[in-house]
Length: 180
Image 1 (cartoon, helix red, strand yellow):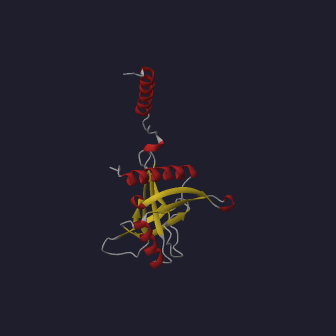
Image 2 (spheres, rainbow, N blue to C red):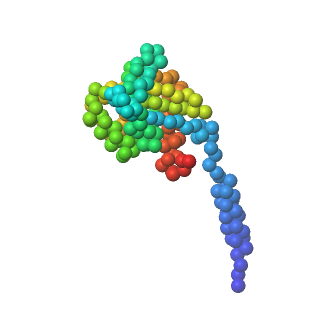
Image 3 (cartoon, rainbow, N blue to C red):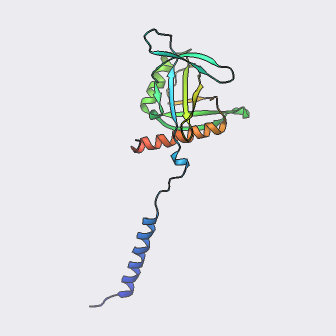
């Protein structure tokens, strides 16, 4: 019986290198991976005496009071992705939200049935979630059936990037089923 010791040793070395290489390769969470954000989109409503609505102040420089439903129509749980877009002709930026099937259905339903009203958007971001406020109240002008909602937020571009980063992290965790 012939034993090919050199061939066996080569296979052993290759197996060891492969095993060590995969064992040492772990996913490293960065500080950016831990950033989380929250998002709530409410619909403008009439004042009701039963307590299903509330009045909020949107915008910081020239505040506008808007009465909204207390319960949001969509949240970050309905979000697939978010991104910061440059506005045309360098006139600023916008945030674009892409929703899942349920979020798309809700945005479509309210945009079709409530033209002339506003979506009122609340965002929360930052390391401790302390940075949060009403960001925008875009006017509903048409039916939105593609699951995309864009708005110009009342925030700095840096804060917008932090909001979007946190929303995308939360979306990934929800889609993986690892959200606690």
